Image: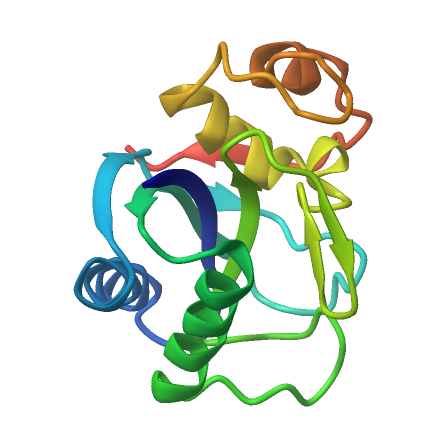
Length: 160
């Protein structure tokens, strides 16, 4: 059994319902949710001409290998109606495999830890809420330390 951390994001439609549905599907199809962050409002990053995101991170205990878990995340995105019209564009749901235990993987279509995790406040803030002392397997800094050093200054705030 591995502990994976998955970032959930949505900026189209009923964002809260999309995050809830994605978490439900993860638990049904991929494992058991052991930790769940609060919801966070976040400004879009890189492609800024779109609505704000609602983000969350879940800690999932899963028997799936990392590649199979990523495949399940992509299947959930498709089942929920995600259509990839442009890179980093608006989406009904986005599931990013951020960390998978302390595994480092590099291959076609799969890189763990997520290669931009340390640069994304919208992923680090909710992850730091549920696993502040977790060490990034490549950078060897805790999630709390990565958040404190994150160069991303975009708005990320907990939902009240």
